Image 1: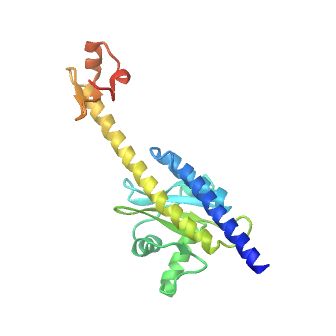
Image 2 (image 1 turned 120 degrees about the horizontal axis):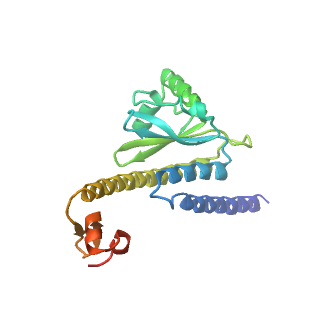
Image 3 (image 1 turned 90 degrees about the horizontal axis):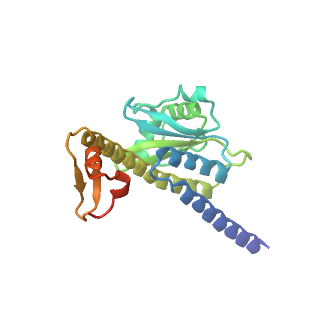
Length: 232
């Protein structure tokens, strides 16, 4: 009976893992849209793990702070008051250790004073677990997760899967940031081209039209959407 129970658990655990990974793959389909990536990650954690609260903080260049960008289970007025700086204990610890942090089971290496500061800051976001979101250039942000609505603790398997989610989630977020930058650059270039008093068409190494300004559209009597990404 014990062996059968273990086999049933392994089958359930394997199915559970595959189901979460399937949901996760759906969560990062919208890789070009940061808001959708974040929303999908929050939804995945809430649905798959039954979390009562989830919040994602990302680094904001304008304010030089980590600000809440997507959440579940938080009042909006509460979110407006939340921010973390690089000097804060939580941010320092995540940067130095790049590990999952569970408030009920802090590592032995943490001193009493550091542990007190970490618990205080983690309590501010109503989290039980904190997952780092690390990119190629450092800490992009972090995910704070509350408790399970069932009252159960997060199992070892749960924590391992959550770490996987945070690793690939960071990749999706970084790619979305990159897409945003490229889009802004394209928009800037297009604005410059549209204000040049001559017709301009650019072509890549493969002979595909990549940009065309309004003067060129008018002179050639064509529309940009008809020729972009088309061969000359």
